Length: 329
Image: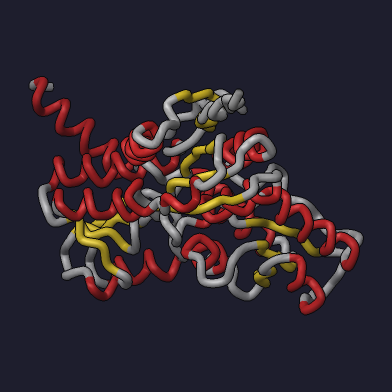
């Protein structure tokens, strides 16, 4: 008699939290509110957040993304992205008589203020981050004569400082926690008196999303991370998944980028999204997976997030004025 073999149950482990963090939510709403308040176009210096879908959606509403302040016509409104800009960019905007809205994430602003404070105290600042990333460029611009970029543990051997008793480390907010601490450990070995920032620079949302992926990684044959290739925190989630034991992990912007060959021999798919990814894109992947037999969805919850940030002060001021006018006050 022929033995029957049961088909293994297919399931999705869905990470929580995932997707939009408070800083991204604030930045995207800021662009939308500015378009409502002032009308199109609203110029945005660099992508407001690193997500292809978000940028395309805002472009359709009238946002124009530019690479340089010089591309913004004089007298126009320009918004600075969530990743922050250097003081020289604010100066360029003033020279061109641009009205500015600063949508820099408050957690990035915190790192900028730390850089200024330690530079004023004449510390050498070792900034852990990825060369060329907009956030790193913005932070470095706060104290260019005091900041040295350290791009991973392998870069530590090249670091030189003026006074080993006055050295502090700061970091890009969207890095892998593990890789950052590996770099910090290497720096401490070289500079035993290295000072740490007063509070962790890596953003709470980045950490929470990485913790959730670590919890699901060992149980997942495949982890799909929804996010764009220029999103540092999304790229890190793929690395964290593989480090946590996932057999395979991939980054996709949209469900139609998933290769069906990835599902060969897979019974458990882990699914998460970067901090700049709207939930509609995750829903698209869930639907795609369900059509291929992955209908059972289990939540993997690592943390509760309740943090919110108020809109940029420029918008809050104008919105308050508009509300007062409408109410007749």
